[in-house]
Length: 142
Image (tube, rainbow, N blue to C red; front, side, top):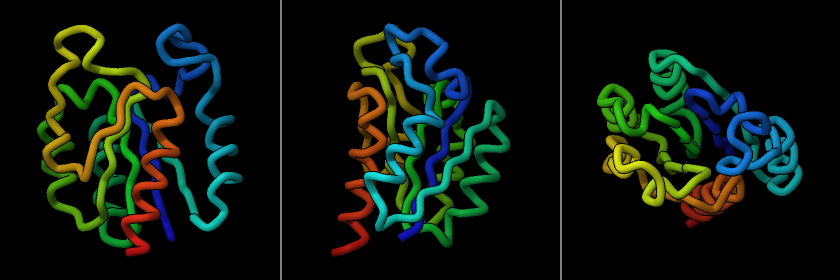
């Protein structure tokens, strides 16, 4: 089972940026824990602050991977291009947000990508990534 995690803008600052909202652990540290928790899956990780690079990553792996965990960050609320890229690939995409986007500023309440994703997990901290991995692994084992 091959699953790709894609993180969008500013998520490279996890552990440093707004720890009251996003926690104090870096994603790299959490990613190692995920790999140990899910040894049956080959999990890859990509992060970019650039919208086009996220789209390129989705298109590159979107026909060969068993699933994608996507935290598009602020592009969630602005990117029709990422919405269209998700709609154009075969791999199922689970949308993840560390914070509860519906308990934050109103502009964060609208996701332009959810309609093309298999589902949305928000507000459970970094554990949302594990929840998404479980979903994708169970979906592919049916």
